[in-house]
Length: 271
Image 1 (cartoon, rainbow, N blue to C red):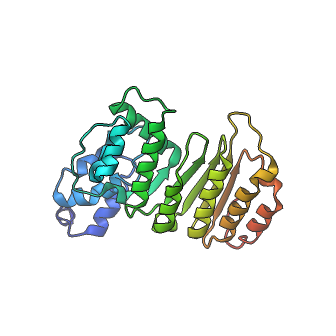
Image 2 (tube, one colour):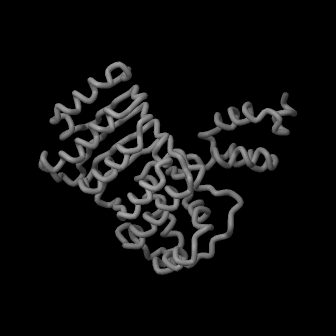
Image 3 (cartoon, rainbow, N blue to C red):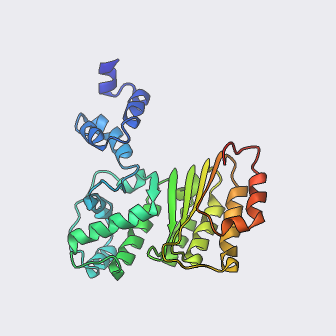
């Protein structure tokens, strides 16, 4: 059986073995060197969750290998003058886990590699973050786990939401969704939630976390559009099993949340 596995004659068994190495990046890297078949099976797993804290940001260059001339010119205007080598794989397509805050931090780290004069508030961070998220959305990737952080320091262009509308597969299979409210941009947060509400029905775990690092207090009425979208997300789920609230300030003020959870009481096993 061992020889058959090495040759790739038992692909399902091989896939299970490699999936068990999902948290061991170094072992997965080693697997890519065993054979062409092992490489072909290991790479998608290795790139399921690339935006990890411990991972060096240079991998982001692989995403930019297929950019058109306009996008390359755009990067140069942002101080990125690198020529990116063509890659064998479409790495963006393998993405399954995305934490938007880690994503933003890793993009800033990548920019600093090529443009040391960059700082986190630089306009180049805004443009390159949007360029990469659009590339991921349009790559054919299908997310399984998504952590969405609503923050003033994480802004998205209107074209991102248009791209999401045109590439509904990106959100269609999300099973674990975390929503984090920080120094909140209510308009952006509401747009994200409305987009999710239209396309996500397979969530099993839904988490909601309110934070307020800047001490800013929002008027309850300002939160209404966001809360209504959140209620719709709860009600529209077909497989919801777990619902979590952390440090909430606003959301519990709305009885509609309780009503939405009651509508899911036959499915939810843990709150």
